[in-house]
Picture 1 (cartoon, rainbow, N blue to C red):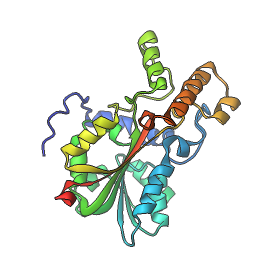
Picture 2 (cartoon, helix red, strand yellow):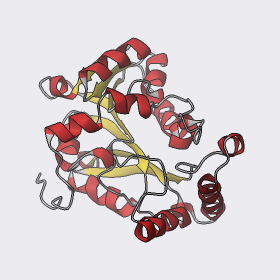
Picture 3 (cartoon, helix red, strand yellow):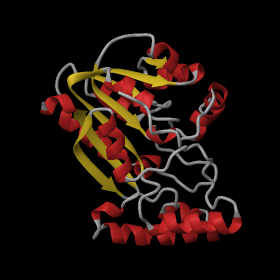
Picture 4 (tube, rainbow, N blue to C red):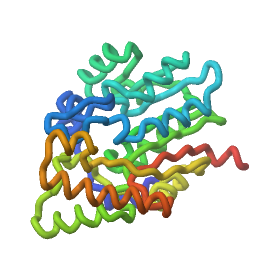
Length: 271
């Protein structure tokens, strides 16, 4: 398999990656439900759509499954649920301090990426929760993870569709062009913007085919109703309005959502 075709992705140095995904980043982007400092998003669990991924995990449940949560953060609802189900779990993170914090919080084994790539072992379920859009380029990592997937295994990928058609995406693009600045408080950690088509093509390049695909809509990066009421701002109100319209449209047009969950398996299963 070749990684050609990904030259448009910005190439991050080891130093860039260390700065982006340090302990500070982990604290700011905790995957467990909590309120951030600006109170703009008081339910990270719902805004990331974790219920979709956990539901897929529960459907795949079998005794003694081995689960890998690649890029688990310090409190991954997916890894925590897999552990509650009695499955063998392993988390992987970039920063060693984040790994230690994750192990303490989740009482599960979490390895650094450097350690993980030096070890062997295969997995029945490999999960990437809001990870793919951070990889630069994504191909080599996806290829290495595919090689660690059992023949009958599944890869679950969850993340944003930031290049998908939506009114909010159009508004954010307009303000970025007009004011040459971002309109949300989200730091620029993402190095690629995905659509359904781009995700499918990426999977096909690494001999993965879609088993199930789900597109859904969340309020992120707009504030929830409670967050807007408790900490009103014009910017938050604008984001909330346009995202509410997107919610309505997505009820009628399934491909109109801003997030996705894909369950993929090896092409060899179809051979």
